[in-house]
Length: 252
Image (tube, rainbow, N blue to C red; front, side, top):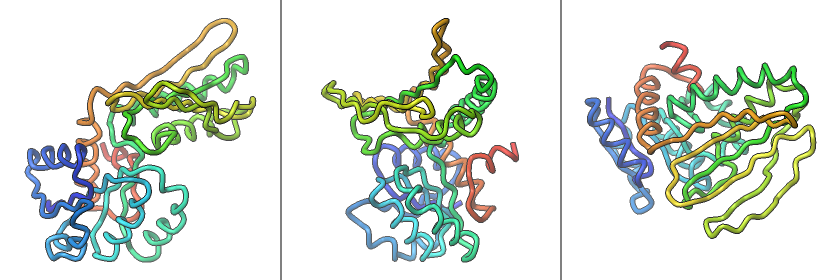
C-alpha cells in the first residue's frame, strides 16, 4: 500500500516506521514547509493519506486530500464538531472517504467498551455522580481531548441523568488551575491537565458518599496510536465512506 503522511512530527515519524515495518511504502511526506506537495504526482498516487496535525489546519488538509482523490485517515481532534455535517455529506454524496477517530489506540477502543458497559450499570444507581479527567503533554493545543469528548458522549448516551458534557477545570504546565465551569447535576464535567510529555491518561470516576469507582486508560507511549492509525489505513484502502473504529473492529 502507498501511504502519504500529513504532519511529520513525532507521531508522523512513528507512523512511518510502523508502516515500513508492515511492508508499506511512504510515497509522500507533507509538513508545514512543503504544502505545495499536496499538488504533487507522488501525493496523488497514494492509496491513503494519514493526517495527524492541528485543529486549525486539519479540515483544510482533509479537503486537499478529497480534491486529489486520496482517501484519508485523520486523528486530528478539535475540528470535527464544526465540520461534521459537511464531511458526512461529501462522503455520502461525492464518494469521498474519511476514516476519523479521536484515538486510534486499540486499548482506548476497549476502554470505551468498558466505559459504555459501566455507564449502563451506573444508570440504575443515582447516588453515584460521574466526572472525567484527561492528562496530556504540554504541546496539546485543544482541551478537553478528542478522546475525552468521545468517552463523555458514550457515557451520556447511557445515563439518563446526564444531558451534556462541560469543561470543568484546566491545569496549565506551570501548575496554575482555572475553573472554567462548575458542572450542574445534569452535566458531566471534564477536567484537563497539561503536564510534561504525557501521551494520554483518561480517567472516569463514579463517586458516592459510600465509595468511589474509577476506570483509567494510561498510554505508555504514542506507539499504540500510531499502530492503530496504520491498521485504519489498511482498512480504509479497501473501504469507502465515513469510517470509524467501530467499522474496523466489526470485522475482527
